[in-house]
Image 1 (tube, rainbow, N blue to C red):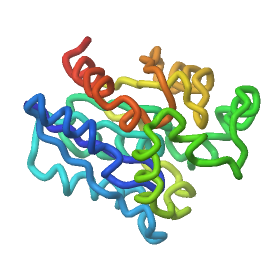
Image 2: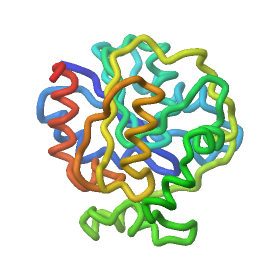
Image 3: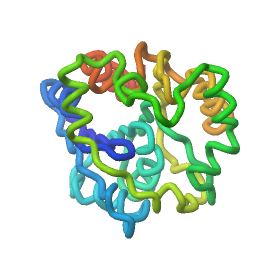
Length: 223
């Protein structure tokens, strides 16, 4: 039995993972999916990691799975907990000393988004994030969403190097906020690996939870 620590993205809640959590528990695994302090302007990345570490407690055989901005939390968790695997799902990939804004600038994100015909700031969040999620589930996700404090994204990334943990990256081929071509390049340049891919948009934990759970299990088993 493994312990899956499921880490949500910006302005979200642990509920985002509830369907995947049910799939993993059905396979006999333990699952934690804490709410991060994303509305708190006094909370930094260390506080985000502490929320996950507190939820993990003394559990072992850890698999850390991070969505989107959760990519800034998962490596800090894995540097402090005995993790066997880290999986970034449509995740950001930080570099030492770099803020989230600097990460986007350094990787040519704005240009890649424009080239892919990506959304502008006023775009409908359903069309951007939940376009392939069942409408009722997308509505609940929006209702549960929270404001995202600016402080963590403005904080220089604190780790000096990527933690020594087996890492996989799963990009979403129809992601409208993190274009697939951009994600492929970022993963190759920053992690030195080829990403794995899944169909659909930015939120596969809601659009295809059973498939995502199967992919996580395959990664855990080294497939």
